[in-house]
Length: 266
Image 1: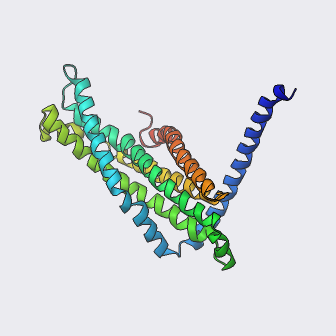
Image 2: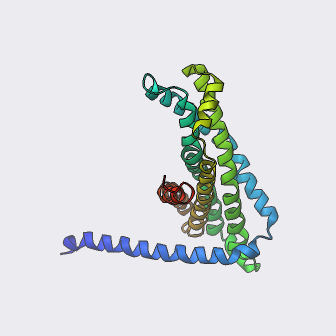
Image 3: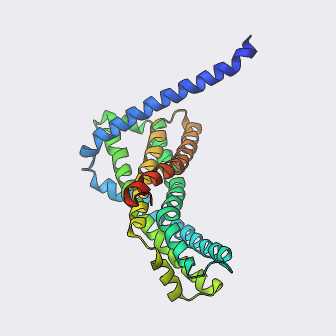
């Protein structure tokens, strides 16, 4: 009998853990929303996190976006050759980078780096009782640790996305000129053919939400850390997985909303 009921028991345990985790996350979000206004006074911590999240991520974003733009140019030219005028290579680069590749890939690479760092840092503070020490000193950990990181993430992700878009377009143009054989003028004319400023706005909206997802994943799992060094590693893994999956899932729903609001689903 025990063998027959084991699968159901395991499934029930997973469901209970999922419901309990959802409740803990809801409580965490409620506490964060309550602590944001008073937490804004930690301006120096905000700027420190902007450096850690934004400036320190520039090399990674630079390399990723440069080669993504180059690959997009090569792939577009390969698909178009003999069927579609190559002037549309620039069109494809601008359309795909501004609203999709730029914000999503930037969020994924930054999410892997920043999400892991946040979870490891806060998780280490949890298991070494530094968070308990803050509470003893009448300092609210949510206000002091989470709010500056959350605000910095939603502030820096759109800026990193603008940087990534610029580098990706430049990388695509360099490859188009040197490998595909079209001129820079032709590439730029192609970019202007179907350009819509709402493409940029839509990408920035995505980046704003992705920044929130990255910060929430890292901080939440950091606060939930238990069990020493092994627990820190487990929390780091969960934070990275949650941020990457959350980014990809929300990308679809954000696309639905953005296309309705900005483009009228045309």
